[in-house]
Each structure stands twice: as C-alpha cells, then as structure tokens.
Amino acid sequence: MRSWVRWSARVAVLSGMFASFSVAADASERIMVEVEGRSLVLADSSRTVGAALVEAGRPLRAGSLRSAVTRRVLVSDVDPPRITVNGGPASTATRLRPEDDVRVRDGVDSTEAVGEREVTLPPPPLPAVEEGLWRPGRPRVERLTVGEMSGEVVSRDVVAEEVPPEPVTDRVVALTFDDGPDPRWTPPILQILREEGVRATFCVLAEPGRRFPELVRAQHDAGHTHCDHTVDHPNLARRSRAEVLRQVGGGAAFLESVDGVWPQFLRAPFGVVTPEVVRVARRLRLRVLGWTVDSSDYLESPPEAIVVRTMSQVRPGAVVLLHDGGGDRSSTVAALRPLIQALKAEGYGFTTPALQPAVV
Image (tube, rainbow, N blue to C red; front, side, top):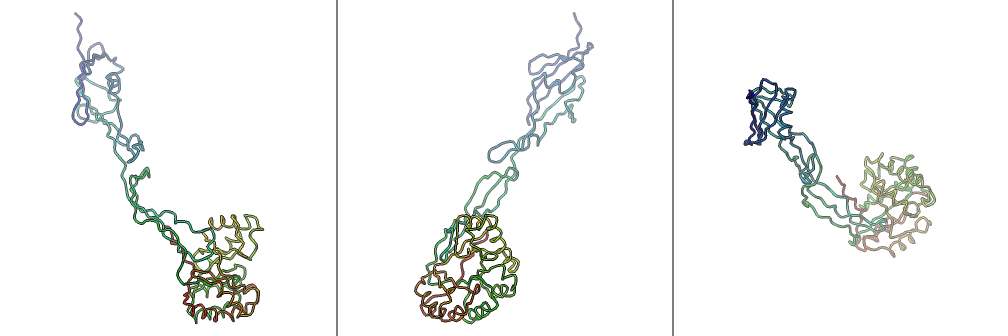
C-alpha cells in the first residue's frame, strides 16, 4: 500500500466574504488539495497561494469605484482583495506549508461621493436687433447634485425659473447719441443732461475716443451708458468678416480700457445690420442696439424741426437717435433741452437700455 501523507484543503464561505482552506505536504513533493469536495493535486513548483486559488477556481476580485448614476466603473481597483495566511498578510506569490490556513476577502465596490452646485443657464435670447427698449428677463438657475469624479447629474432642482424678455411698455424713452466724442458738442450735451437729470446712452467711436478719452470718461462718471459704435464708422456690410471683427472688437476694447468693463451694446454705423454683424456681436458678447425714433439731426435741421420730428414718432419704450459728433451738431445742442422738456410735459421719463444680468 502506497504511503502518502495526504495534503488536504477545505474551503468554507465565511462571514465578510472570506474563503479558507488548509494545506499539508507529502514526501513525494506533491500536494493533494481538497477544495469544496474536489480533490486536486499540485506539483511542488505550484505550492503558492496563487496556484492554489487557480486550481480551486477561486478568482480574486478587486472592488471598483462606480459612478452614482450609471454605475459605470471609474476606478477598477480602488479596493484590492486581501489575502491572509494563518491570519497574516500574504500575496499570490506566498509559498504554502503544511497545515497553512489561507483566506481571501474580495474588494468591495463603492460609489463616488456627490456634491451640490448651482448652475445658471444661458439667459433667454433677446431680439437680434433691439430697436426699442427691452427688459432682458432672467435666466433659469438650477441646483445640481453631481458625482464628484464623473460629473454625472444625480438630480436637479429649480432654484429660479426663467423669466423671458419683454418689450418695455412704460412711458419712458432712451436718448442715444452717436459718433462722438467731440470737444465742441459733447461737453454742452453732458451739461444739459446733468441739469435736466437725464441719463443717456453714448455710442462711442474709438478713433475720436482715443483723442479725447477725458470726454468718454466724463460720460461714464456721470452715469451714462456706453455703446460700441466701432473704431471709425465703416459700413460693415461692405467689409470682410475679419474687418467686422476688428472694427467691433476694437471699439469694445477701447470702451473697456476707459470704463473698466466690457460694454454690452453695439450700434452698427448707419444702422446697417447684417447676419454677419449679429454673429460677430454675439461672439463678442454684445447686444445690437437699433432705434425707433430717428431725429434726423444729422441733416442739420433747425432745432425746432428736430423737436417736432422726434415728438411725432415717440412712443413708450422708444429709443431716440441723436448725435454728439460726426459734423456740426449745434442744432442738436440747441434742440436738446426743449426736446427733454417736451417729453417731460407728455409724461415721459428717461432711461437707458437695461443691462443683461451677468451669468456666473
């Protein structure tokens, strides 16, 4: 009868997902293993934990970090399996001895942490060209719960609903002045506006603005609104896209250098607005400002004619086109106070185009 020193192994499922078995050696340098009722024989060269686990059909499983929403794997081995031999740490390369007790605890899957943040969505769109006054409305604000690693949205709650823009129907008008600054006409216009308590909008050309930056600064310091009117007043419909970008961007950059903030409005020279002008304006975060009342003061009409022409077109929410540069504006200066007083007598107040709320 052959004399074998039987190697034996038994495997049991333990609490905490542990598996165990015992091993004994024989004189012929072979190992007989019994794993859950199966008898296996291992050669001496295979007396390692890893080989025993392979023969036993016991794979090692690492725990993964998974997303909170789709459960996809973000990190595959965030919790590696743990092997012990006789209660001490071991690896798959650990050599086995008689009566060793091997246990395995698989890694445990976990879910990424989540956090909250508020998101302001893009504001509701205004008209491509704002010919009258508009209230910009308010963008939708949401509170998102998101996976901190995946960025996947777990849930979303509305903090503030979107409010759409709407035209102004109050009895107010906006006075706008193009083509300045000009040292002959801008200062008296500023003086009249100050005395009458009126805030206006100045559509500034960068070229004269660079020559008279103190006038542009005086407009800003008096609380008036600035509007980009390009660098030197070309017809943008006749210019290349690159030139449109240079003209519009250069005018806006000049105003930023004086005011410390990027302007929100563009008025195209001659009021000529093409789809390309609108695209460039939006790319540069500018709203295109038109007008509803053309005073035609650039025709150098008598002051009385400017007042009558304007009053005949005015309506609530109107934007009035005037000029403080680009020619002889003495009639505009002479007409300004009578025009303001006539509008006041008709019950009109004065405002500037409403600024779009910033999106953070």
